Length: 99
Image (cartoon, rainbow, N blue to C red):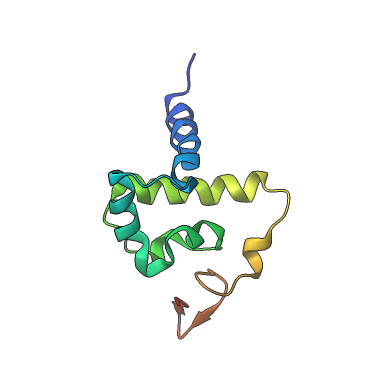
């Protein structure tokens, strides 16, 4: 039997390669607009807390949540733990540090 939740997550995460390629596509403009104040593609390298990010798109919010969980479970190196910006463990007055 197919686990639909797992299938949706895997297909969405597989689409991340299209986000990181250099091609400029109209759908990337919206993503760029949403993630501009959080560092756009740099955010994928951070140890962010999804609840700290005010992302209006449910799809991209879920994608970032799934990416964070996937990365924690399967990453060989954990360099994102050393980045200060958007780090869930580094806070000033209870708020995350954004550049």
